[in-house]
Image (cartoon, rainbow, N blue to C red):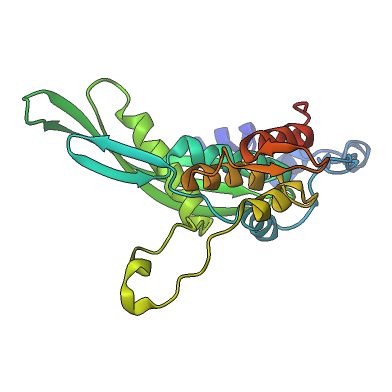
Length: 260
């Protein structure tokens, strides 16, 4: 409805057929200036993602990432556990989603706040958020998802922290991203013989494999750090001895344009 129609409606009047015809653009004007198609002049570049539906693009993201290990340690106030931090998760997902043309954006954030008192008597601001996410594929089609996050902070960062938790939950949960960590029950006697751990040479071969994506190279680094194998020396593609850490960094730089 145009401005003239809105004004008439507000005054309790309706426009006559002739008046409505006056509001319509002439046919020759419409033909001369058609609605532009944003993809009409698109020409794919060598590094552009494949124009596939969003669910296929997301499957490709998952295939390239495979797993993210719990390589970070929380050890404060008598509490100790391994976890996957939001920075680690974003560092892994970021380049892979870029490669496949996937965007993840928050479309709506609903927040609530409270106050908590610590044992020492200091006040902490508590934030709980529900974030509605839009996952956009390379063709522009979308998926709509929802996650929640909670955080405490003594200053002004509880909202940011809560949204970061919601983002990590989205990427790990929607990505069904395993840790590939050892099963806690693997040490039980009745479980039988454990599967052998991966050798340094098998990691070397995967790093040098041309099909190994930059995202997977980052994940290999996290796995090796978790296994304390970054300093393990192997023979590289030229027969020289090199640590797995140096080899992975060099190959990652070569494949991302960051230099050798």
